[in-house]
Image (cartoon, rainbow over all chains, first blue to last red; front, side):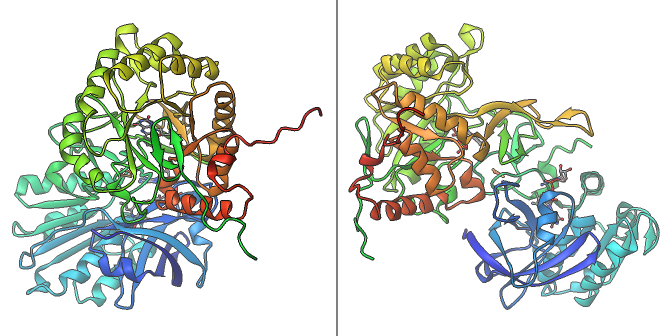
Length: 260
Length: 313
Ligand SMILES: Cc1cc2nc3c(=O)[nH]c(=O)nc-3n(C[C@H](O)[C@H](O)[C@H](O)COP(=O)(O)OP(=O)(O)OC[C@H]3O[C@@H](n4cnc5c(N)ncnc54)[C@H](O)[C@@H]3O)c2cc1C
Ligand SMILES: Cc1cc2nc3c(=O)[nH]c(=O)nc-3n(C[C@H](O)[C@H](O)[C@H](O)COP(=O)(O)O)c2cc1C
Ligand code: FES
């Protein structure tokens, strides 16, 4: 599998909320090779502090070679990234990891919470070419309207109906995406979930009971993203460890020991 | 302007081990080479030191295993590895196809385990030397790390030397009071070279949750933060032993590598830098060639240990 290190000029960036940013980077080699669910390692500046790259899901790619990221400012690295402007560059390594694998003619149910929505847009776009796209269900949740509404629009533009939920009830269903899942998923759905661990664990459990195949995209701290440091471990079902950057980030939910 | 020295000679020798250039990659930071084949021309670096290998596979420590610190990182991987059998079957074939030298980093709980590993790893095309990681606890001696006792370090060195014809490099732990005593002990044990430093033991605490940030509570500090300690130890050791020294610790740029060579290292290993700059080893190799082409020295060997210390002050 081809991986690239690319100094990528920022083509555009937009601030969806004071702390959620979408940035488009020109990185044609990565854009061409990327599959939904894969990620890139991003250098937040060129100094030695912070030292390590930060992992971000590939939110979207464009036909003219852009890689789009969606991220939330949560600490030093994301704060530095947010200061960069159009014309400046960000160093990317990718595409990395194992993405989602869906059979084209099975209906899919995409479940996203918060920044976990990021990889699902790229996946939803890929699913547009499936024979019956209207059978797919898209369920998205976040804390507030501000965080969720702009993202829901992207999926609607692709032609999908979207079911939304917010913690504060300011947009869509008042409550959790797990409740939407009970309502809108069918036994035929292949489920793809990305979001906070409690959400993924709950969906994985419901899928296990209902017999749905479920894939979950996991997060850990990563030093390399390349399968070299062995730092990105999660506990595997049946004992032992798996490495998120190499065996994942997308796992069959049955491979993962859900501890929450 | 013409270069003084258009095609500098970067070759160095570590005992019988001849390297095309002094840039190696450090154990545990470069996988088994293949992981970096998209970023580094593996035929052009000096040597790869693969992830530490034990007799039996090891699962490693519970997560979280890595945490970032100012200009560095702590790791508590717990020596996860595939074990020597799987290494030979699954990892060695790829390493046999590349031109650079390959050293296998070995670790064990007892002298017998190190010896068994040395025997297993000898006589294979594609394995050019061993690097003994003596930062491991000796379970037969109450868990005291081999690397903190001069006697145990010398004993394991001598036993491995007797078990193999491969060049044997001993990798020193910096977590000792007197690094020179350790270095002399492994030199007396018959080591062909010394590499240093391994990680410095450290710790990180989350003040909000009041919990340690690593699953293993303590871990090894690496990266630019440890470079001054590593340079000091390399200089002290190189000034006091006759065998070649390989400098490790926070090397990420050509200038870093030159500093270690000046301090007396015959070669360097790039570690944590591979994580944030996956082509670092290639960049540094090219950087050393460019640097030397502007210097009066014709070969890299002339640079080694040429630190200038003015008399008086
Ligand atoms: C495969 C993968 C894909 C990801 N995709 C996205 C994405 O599309 N959009 C997005 O906003 N974020 C994503 N993340 C999380 C993102 O990597 C972290 O938010 C980022 O590294 C934080 O960097 P920082 O320097 O700003 O924060 P730091 O100062 O490093 O940390 C701030 C806080 O965030 C926590 N944190 C840091 N890194 C991680 C991590 N890797 N996983 C979980 N918690 C972490 C820390 O424990 C701390 O509490 C992804 C993570 C992974 C592993
Ligand atoms: C994630 C990680 C894993 C490591 N694994 C090993 C190992 O298996 N054996 C070993 O001798 N040293 C190991 N080391 C130590 C490095 O080889 C090196 O000595 C140390 O990191 C200092 O160099 P640096 O600052 O350039 O990283 C590891 C270091 C890191 C960061
Ligand atoms: S992040 Fe280094 S092995 Fe996964």
